[in-house]
Image (cartoon, rainbow, N blue to C red; front, side):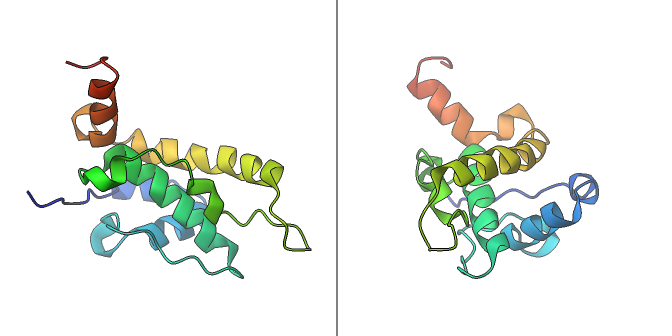
Length: 130
């Protein structure tokens, strides 16, 4: 079975702020189809790390590719949460995650329940869905 990535509806994209639209542009291909692989992270470009995080979280929820449905426990590692000495700061990461999760929720909530493949898979694994 071929895994086809879903698309983000144009009306959702139009209602996003400038930074959110930049992130969505990095996580989608033509016609707003979500990329099948994580966008490249460029260390000096903070938006790319944020886009990688958002892509991973969205892919977890909506992708039909079982590889994307693994728990995204390392998604925050791509976030630009470093201080001026290059040290990782988890408190900065947590703040960014909360802000970016709002964007993730806007996008994921635009999908029908039947399109939430990762949610269905984990729901079955935990016995919430038969």
